[in-house]
Image (tube, rainbow, N blue to C red; front, side, top):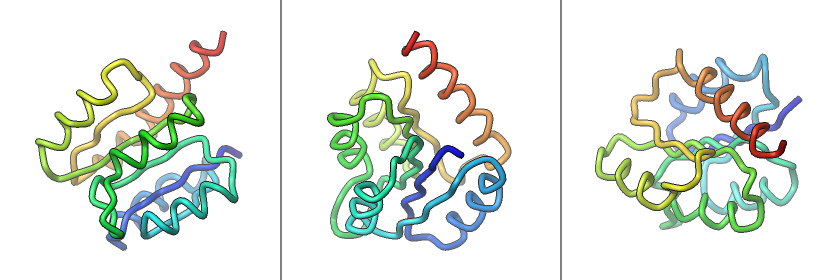
Length: 127
């Protein structure tokens, strides 16, 4: 089963994502940047869903950039309720089709579709 890491400090967001995704993925939860880094080191994470505003004064955008340096094949979804953050994500990762911005509230009904599309793109990249 593919491992998916959710990094968000909002319990309701985490709960809703976990309920939708746990039947198809091994869902791992981190509520802070520090916890996410520890989890990343302990597991082979293939898919990441992260908030832009991580506590520990870290940005989800910077976190994804750090992880992508070592694992370019990581699929990442960066979430925020602020439209300006979407522009930052699209600018920083414009050449990476495996990174996508999701505006909060996240459309839970579409998240699986987004993941499947990204998995297909990743597979195409590897062939």
